[in-house]
Length: 79
Image (cartoon, rainbow, N blue to C red; front, side, top):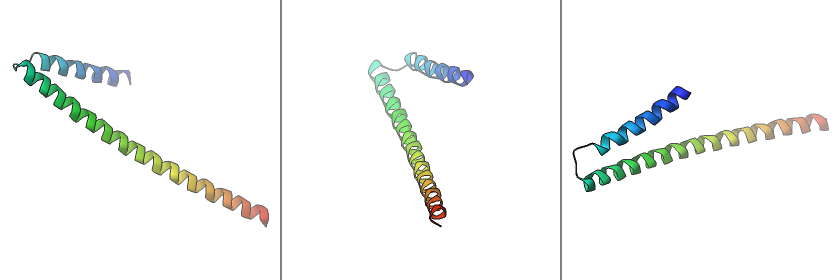
């Protein structure tokens, strides 16, 4: 896990350094950085929403299972 985090941080720092040394104007560089940041932000938001939907689905399934188990217990107690 530490290796993956270190790799990710290294990749981000490397990308930032590469952008800073790229042969382009300051304004163009800032535009490129903003575009990339916006793209990555949208990607992260999308993945977060997918994860949240998956989590909600799991919670709903577990709730249904608990209700089914609870109903089954009540039926046995009432017999």
